[in-house]
Amino acid sequence: MNILFLGPPGSGKGTQAQNLSSYLKIPTLSSGDILRKECDSGSQLGKEIQIIMNKGDLVSDDLIVLLIEKFLIKNDSNGFILDGFPRNINQANILDSMLIKIEKSIEKVFNFEVDDEILVKRILGRYSCKECGSIYNNYFKPTVNSGVCDKCGSTNFESRKDDNEESLKNRLSVYHKSTFPLVEFYQKKHLLISIDGLKSSSLIFEELKKHFKL
Ligand code: ADP
Image (cartoon, rainbow, N blue to C red):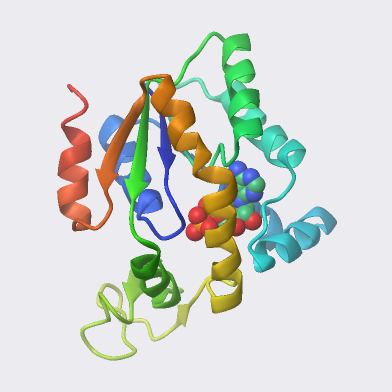
């Protein structure tokens, strides 16, 4: 089963990609995560990527395609979930050609729908525990005891460098301009399944599971 997750930043697709990945026992590739890993490595390329990500712009199609291609070629499991790629029509066309080469195809595309107003609160309020990675939100899900992680008790928290007002504004505008057209692209291929991203995380996961017979 080869799956794509589409949706604006903060729509919850990353969380659900992880949930579904464990449920279906297939790997998830998050384009944002592989780019962040490159940034953390301290390489020259990482430094260049960080500048682009901080602004909320997209990195070049050539670069992201190269990274995704590496993953697709070496992936030998029974499927995959792509989260954050493709992000524009050019990337989607390149993905189609890559998949033809390796004799695979996308079977389902889940599109997470959430209004911009909610996305802003979700993203600007989001922070995570530096020790165990648990995710919290100032508006929707603060820690039970202020400043202490519910799960591991740590008092060290962090926010993503691009989760600030200016970068977010740009990420949302890039989403509407470049990524949203993919909804129609996959609709025309009869692959699109809409998900109401406003529902609770557990309800969304239940809904996703219904699309798979295990
Ligand atoms: P979000 O969806 O919350 O913005 P991601 O982790 O998916 O977060 O992406 C973070 C950043 O990584 C994007 O703003 C962009 O700079 C870069 N990025 C991720 N995926 C792609 C892609 N497919 N093409 C180009 N840039 C990408």
